[in-house]
Image (tube, rainbow, N blue to C red; front, top):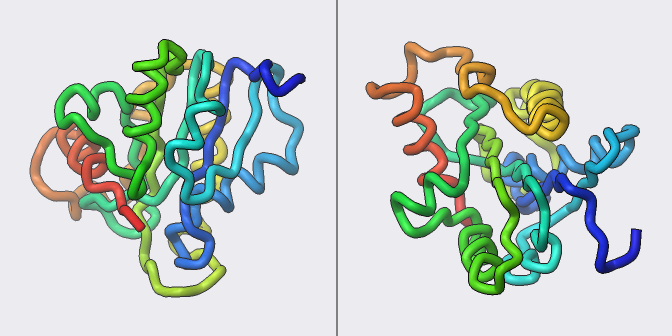
Length: 189
């Protein structure tokens, strides 16, 4: 593939490896990069990138973002939401300082936005300085990888497929409201 050609689907890991669970997205794409991926799927370590993501988003059918997300569930809970719904409702999805929402908005303004963006967020246990994931988030990583690949292959995954292992511990609201709240509260570094 040349620089001007992209796979249809991008799995984008975002985060800061120096802050324990904040690096879950980077750990995820590093694991995926060691596997044989389905045709038309590629992975990218987005680090704590912002506006420079626009070139990587350009013309994609789908972008699947993996990042840490602050929600109502216990550490290791996986949240799934569509970025377009969040952006339409709140005007911003702040994943990082000049983050994904800004990159998506810029790509939209330039006429090269991906057709669909799905965010898979993982509830962190700790954001303390450190290179390793907490045991809870490390245990969730295989499920995140499976969900990301399923999303990439089928291009559609029902929200019900995302498990909330201790749903009774979640704050009141429908599953959609909890996911929305969790994605809107995605951690910024």
